[in-house]
Length: 296
Image (cartoon, rainbow, N blue to C red; front, side):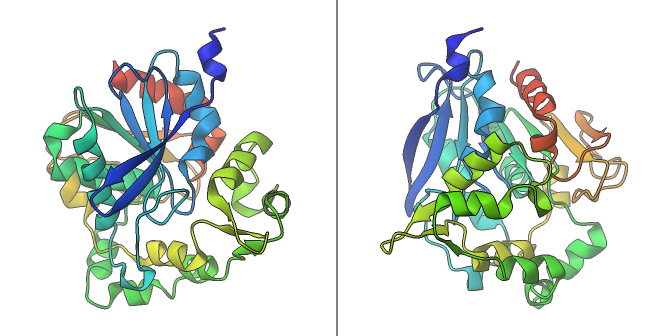
């Protein structure tokens, strides 16, 4: 087995117009970036290390910490967030720094939706999309979310309220790991993946304790900020789109996908039997195969 499979990704800070975006760089740094991978709300690039690292021998992948997450140093005010367009704009700025042919954009949950929005805004900068459980509301939900009072109403949903109440400060990274292991959304995660999530998403404080890099207020604000339009974005894209949809509790509400992919004959919706919204954690093999196929 190739030794590169076990090499740690290179840590990078990439200068964007208003701050630095943290990234993990997998694979041969002499080759162009084959794919950019974006994480879910509240997560970070490190969470996906064990999924992406085995692709290092044949691909170069840039996994980034989005604004308000991980180690990135990009300012954001949760109370002013109304849509995911700031994350889209960061991705577009990142793509402008890359040399070589257009990469594949891939992402999980919010990250998948952000990738979709970026591809619609700058089609020539993207060769294809591989999206795992992107958050896409139904058309009627989207209309409500785009109303002037939409974000305020969504802040009262159980998901947003629950996120705002999350514990933010712990005695140590070990305490964070112990608090999450086997519980809630983390039930299906391996210990390695959970440890990576904690390592990438907790930061030390001056008092010796650790705090979540994505603050509860930030996570809650993202869950409520849906004044963007993935349906309109999909209608503008002609490059290949693959959406991997969980069989259970999916956040990708596009039905059969026929209407969503109208106008794009290269759009595909794949339902993954037995999977939940945490599909990448449950089926890392599928994620790797999809990225390899898209980058060919």
